[in-house]
Image 1: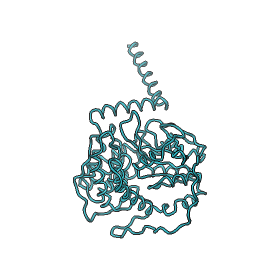
Image 2 (image 1 turned 120 degrees about the vertical axis):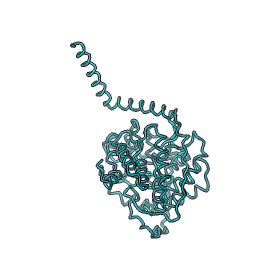
Image 3 (image 1 turned 45 degrees about the horizontal axis):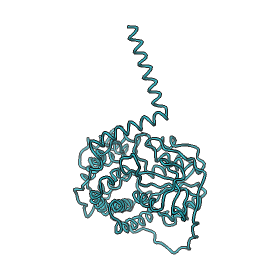
Image 4 (image 1 turned 30 degrees about the vertical axis):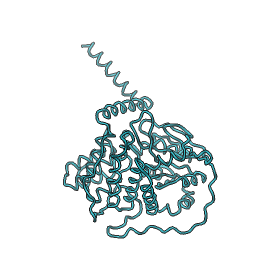
Length: 423
């Protein structure tokens, strides 16, 4: 009996030490990364995600019902159903801008290599460090990713962190270009961009953030603080545009409150949400006419995303249908099968055109292709669609799954509250 108790005590002590070691950040990150890679390799060997193709089966009604949702949309007041969406500011002649310098470089960043699954928090931390913020990616992750296994951080979540957790401000815009980056950098504002990424040892295309802190026209490059590849990484203008296109040329500018007027002046009409999405939609429309292959998929997807923010859900659904039709023709090795991890516009478009089954099928395809189905937005929207079709129990299950993926996810909490369910 005494020997048994001794063995039990040793096993308990060893288990306790292992548990403590697992919580030690350097070891924890390595173990979680290896376990995640093992789980992914097994799942993807059995069911290759690049082979999963979503095929819409419904058509968009000519007169969609445009009821609105508390889920984050543009911050301005929505256009009421039935009203004409023509309140886009008209461009007016402006003074010719001062020519941009041929090169510029911003210094003073605290570079951080990202820990496992922590691209967004690491890059936001680096962007904030330029302004003297003293935290690191663990501080940003605590706000941005309550569940460390959450696969993505949205730009609006980063903007919210800056506005709510620091004494700085931030603004997110789409449809950016090289001149916009150069103008902000030369004026002393680094720019955080969201872009596509492909690297050795990864399972295909995925999303990535970078802090752009310099450029050189003579070399044709921007300089980036990259959380995966290292500091002051040179990225050619051509590669940046190709990678940036995948995320609708989204960018985030952090600034001190006393410089807000300068930032708004630099943005000009782009400071207006509606005008920004209007011009980005025009840009995507032009690219649709000029591009092929995967780039065409991204351009069509961008067109749909911009139309969602303009609340033209019928046109957005049509653009997404065209994007998904193009997707099947992309070589499997190049397919961006993680797209819905990062950009959820199709859910809005299909929901508000009452294409509930297509939404359910798209969300299910997205979740089933993951090694670990942990996307709060996909569960949330599938739950909304199931509820619209009368599947109350299925909807409740999805909202609860959404909260497991992202605790305190407000849209799912509100849906459960309306159903009389306590999380």
